[in-house]
Image (cartoon, rainbow, N blue to C red; front, side, top):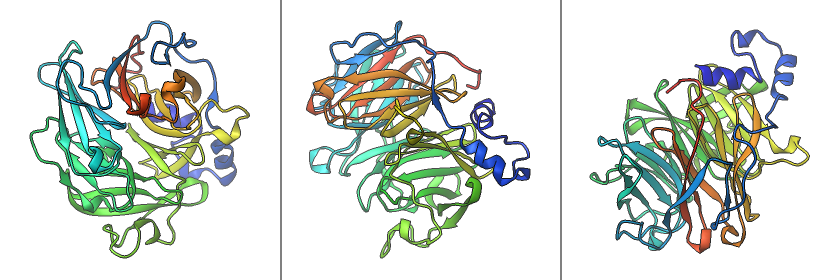
Length: 390
């Protein structure tokens, strides 16, 4: 509970929330994230790949689009996007990565297996024949939800080990999917839609954790951030897009990154440069970062997100400027750059797929169009341990 309390209580008081009046909520929602000193100090000089990190951290290139993964003969896909990691029995882990390219150019998703020391042992495909697989999300039962970012896109449930065939999950909605986040307590999956008027969805399986059947709902945000969920009549969108089936639903301005952590679902909306926090217990959503409130915002184009063991929220930028950041939002709502990717090799790129290894010691991310085809990088160093939640 520590993580949710720190983030939510820094802007609102959760206990007894329903007793507070509208003036309290107006003042609370104004307490958004502000720039401040980061926990790791200033960034150092850029390396040969144009990546700058704080002192004590190092960067390793894991894979490049169109080239064999080091130590294997497997050619890596282009345009790496959403990612997740999974522990293996030998103490190693698997990194899964989506390919945001058409099926004719690869599409789908692939995986890299590491041993306990971080050496690459294998690379292989886990999903084929799908289009523009943007982000997605890992599940507590060890599968990868790969999301197609096309008008009639689906969520595909994949085996990170590559042993089982991927399965389409149309019950989670047929729309322009971006990302998914699983709430193991509430036994639900939350979903974002990458459109200017896209919806914020949740899916409740009929029989947890089977995703083949269940209830898809879309959010309607009311006064002071209270959320009402409405059933989507036709999740497969046979005649009407899912976002248009419920007149009361609230549009989210290009919902992209989404992450569940200890009772809170974080949602990034790229078009308005905001990060929202939805409290699953109180069914209330608030804005914890709004670039429009800052004169010189250090974070724009908010996209993929992940949470570290310390409870810090790491947010990737997609702003098309050629100087891209991964920014930390601390539990105290202070914001600071952790990493910058700059220079011509990152031109027209975006940073995607931020995810820690299962031990929380290495951070993986992609520069999607680095050198034209994209690359995955690994950052190692003294990441702080945090509050003992894991």
